[in-house]
Amino acid sequence: MTITVLPLDTPGLGDRTYLAHDGEVALVVDPQRDYDRVLGIAEAAGVRITHVFESHIHNDYVTGGLELAREVGARYLLNADDPVSFERTGVSDGDVVEVGARMRVRVLLTPGHTHTHLSFALEADGESVAVFTGGSLLFGSTGRPDLLGPDHTQTLAHAQWHSAQRLAAELPDETAVYPTHGFGSFCSATQSGGTASTIGQEKLANPALTTDEARYVEDLLAGLDAYPAYYAHMGPANSAGPGEADLSLPTEADPDELRRRIEAGEWVVDLRTRTAFAAGHVGGTVNFGLDGQFVTYLAWLMPWGTPVTLLGETAEDVAEAQRELVRVGIDRPAAMATGSVEDWSGGQPLRAYRTATFADLAAEGAAGRGPVVLDVRRNQERAERHIAGSLHIPIHEVLERLDEVPAGPVWVHCAGGYRAGVVAALLDAHGIDVVAIDDSFDNAGPAGLHLSTDAVRQEIPA
Image (cartoon, rainbow, N blue to C red; front, top):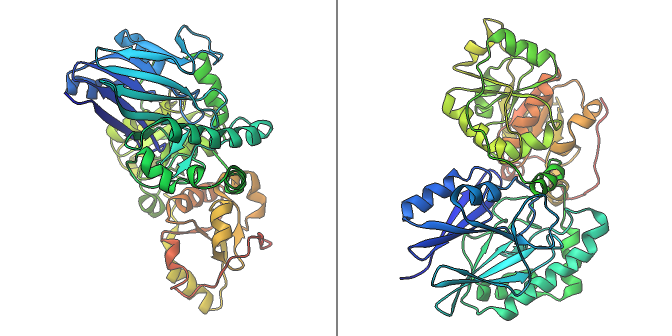
């Protein structure tokens, strides 16, 4: 019987968990907090989980590895040098772990993403099957080396190159590569493409394997941009040993309670699409739609520890949002409300704002109105191309720089519309007149807007 590797995607965070089995027993690598999904695929495959491997102390999510291992009675394995507050099986470079009668896992120290990062090379019947590379070797990229702070970045960047070289030298070309990060995760140094790869394919395309050390490090460091602020809370949570997630729904709030929470400065989050929110919403609410990177941007922008209330058209929408929140350690929403926006407003007038395209923006300029344009993309995106004369405030800096935003109208754009919708809602909640551009930035040039590659930020006074 062949070895089967089943990936489990978490698109909202850009990560993957893996379950590998021989038809009888299974190992799991880097499980998310909501490990019931892992139990589901193990049950469907008819296998028993005996080992749970952790490639590193994660910075982008709260692990479910410890609780999963406890629930199924599996061994929980991570680097023996990781300082943690719970019992586990510590492993080190060169250790070999037997999983059932057929699978053997060789532990490889691959620092770079963290100092103690491990990769796990899986063999079956003496044949190399796969390597689980965590935040080391990704598809066409590597994990970023700057999450432990600037004092470590240079050292980790050089270590990342050596780790990739080690994997390429010690593993056969046909070995399948299974990274945890790189599918939209901010833990990836650059956004990588593809859904599958091998050591041989990475040797042909991965910069860590096709350029020399000095060039790799230079390019890697030059390409780094901001990462979510909530990452600072993930490492400590994982080192302390996170408990089981509570996915039971919060209590229902009526319109009066929603208003009290808004007025108290809490975050009341509308989960509907950005177009539905723009068409009508409760004043003071913010919008993080479930159709985008909901939890990444909510956890990044919301002051950590702020009570959050979820507004969804259905209880299923709230449950989906809650599942995403526990993955980053936001365990219990303060309250919830379901139904229509009219149900939430309690009969009070709704707020609304306009959505538009880049062609609409060009028409405004042609008519001589020259609106203020706010670009909320990240610095690297801005440097490539931007609308000449636009104001640039990256999405994660907007709340700290509200005094730089005119009273309006302000036309907000990003690359595809999601982040523009988030920022438009935030500005609207602060009384700023906004227009949300819900369009692909690829349409800006063809619409007749003048684009510049000058990376210097140009600010328009209020």
